Image (cartoon, rainbow, N blue to C red; front, side):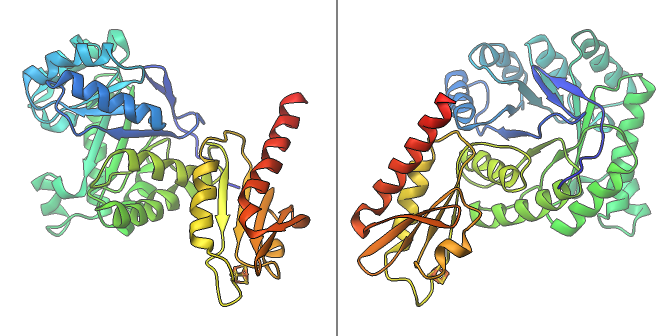
Length: 358
Ligand code: SF4
């Protein structure tokens, strides 16, 4: 059972973050908003896959001006990612963004931060302070042995936090990412003990889909198990759709969110007499459209399968030319192997129909 740490609640558009709100899933598009139609299509595709907040890089004034049209074409909150130039932040606010990602310490001085806050305040637009191990300021690196440490990262984050607090602006969330999982986990743990603001989790530059999935599951998963984290972005070198799939999988496997049916399957061994790899793929594909939180097992043999998967709501196990359908560990049908998957889904459909009628 995960006991979540209390944090302040903020709203990014309509999505609540912190104060025990469901841990939300973010992603970032790969398109400059000046290519408005392409950006809108990319965001809507991500939203369809389950993205709940989207971030967009704003490299130029033309990009900032294009945000209005992008915002009008989408239904999820839009966050502008801005580096160094406070005027881009002002323009982004003018153009209806729901959140900003800036670092108050690197947008050109306190007067510039004040200008952004004065514009953000009436609309209560939250700011994410995003600290990355790879870009700590020189004075912090000098004070911490010349390389990024968790303490140096926390100190950097706190410097940014103090700037906003001094201006009496507390609509903020923080990230403190690193590409090394142990460093990232240590930094988030230390930061969460020092501030009441919600945390955006992520492993930065996590890598390709395979590598990045493993690193994100370890780093983000470890923190969520500690009760730390209010929103997350899995960062992958690949189609951002995978970021959403992995984010959902992390949250559902921790029992923090329910996104529909889940599948477990055995790795197979010398007892398996069916093509379980193909069978598991087919079952996974057919389960994708089921929204009810059922757990389905796909097991390689009738000897051990039902017992090993007795927690599953439904399951199948292969045999020699025939297989069984089981429910909560009990065999309910034996059918020819070719009918196994269809029989399983008939049972599931019937169960779901009965649920609807109750
Ligand atoms: Fe092996 Fe059967 Fe266990 Fe699968 S369920 S790993 S085939 S013993």
